[in-house]
Image (cartoon, rainbow, N blue to C red):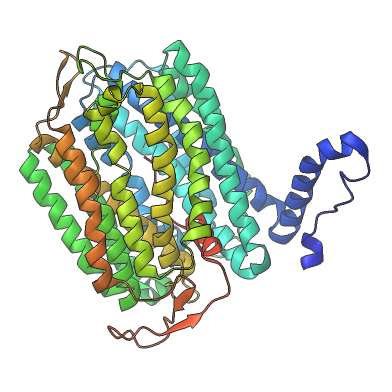
Length: 554
């Protein structure tokens, strides 16, 4: 098998400049042919359809259009933008429920094909609507409904594609790292293309055009789905598979329960703006979800999941307030940075992607061989330190130091912050990759991804309460804004709360090395974690975890 994976090194050597220049393309071509032989060309093509076209380009364009669309067309406040963002993203938190439904209820004999077709039709139609129909103040619900359909398309296609390529990774383990590389290289390349398209679209100030540019990348999924490009055997019957429901009833109950919580959390954002009602519902959801983990998971995995869920939840997100502080005009934020959308969403996105990769390399070089708890302590500290740049800018210290806003933002938020946040993210990913029950990796990652997305939603919901409690106001229609207490939000929510992860490690995280793995087959007793040595590097484990698991959209 190793011989088949080798690329002919004679290409590009001894053939002059032409061979040298063509070598990278030849090497990539040989690599894709090797993958096509191992897992089928259809799956390789569908990974391109899902991860390049949908997760890369479509979500990239929709994400970069969100801020200018909300501010310039809908005239939404920062609080409303964040609240509606929770609603728009809820399809990502119901992935386990969608996956379970598709597993037990085939449509016309197929468990994947027609589910992907239906959501792709709705997603593409939503993008056509957003790109062609003028939407203004008072139509925010129409806008968020369209975004729900777009996210439903991408999340369902992503989920069902994950199921197929993780199956192939189990059957052909020698190409597992190649499949993960293919997935993430496609998604990264798609994101870069979305950024390039945004560069031209934002200059026209026709922000609807960005949604219209995403239409062909969404529509292609209709054709790849109906053509059956994702390899799948046809079921002999269309009946509900009750035997599967009975066998995995705890997982089905958990998936259904999580779906109900997602709907409740999204609904409360729409039916009331009362801060205390939203806080009560958010707290209830967080408590119930925390308890549910111990019902359906092995104890060690439940404790690790609870740690990641709680640290994600208590890192209260007030991202909309920061985005508005950076981008609103002088009438709303006198003396502020007043960044244009081209700089804030395009230039910085390219640089941030590059330095996120640097963060992965730094983690693997310097932190991959230390104890797990120590790695998570360092993760908490650097997550807290990442907010120092925002605090300095809001206090306008950079101007006192003679550093212009754009240069300070580039160094702090665009270069340093993506590196430290990726370094903070990696230990959590490695932790989960080592604690999955054998032969349950795909199901476990789907549930963990949903918990991660729910944690992000709860963090945003707590953030809405925090912005209201701090008196943050961003009324763009009349130009009345108040950012007086934004520094307090940064200190409390951005610097102090992430440090709560440190004491939690003593209760929820096994005291093991980063190269150890927990033996999930042993008795799950508290304080007696059995470990065994593992040959795979943490970076490979982390890459596999990211490839099969969560997708987080900022």
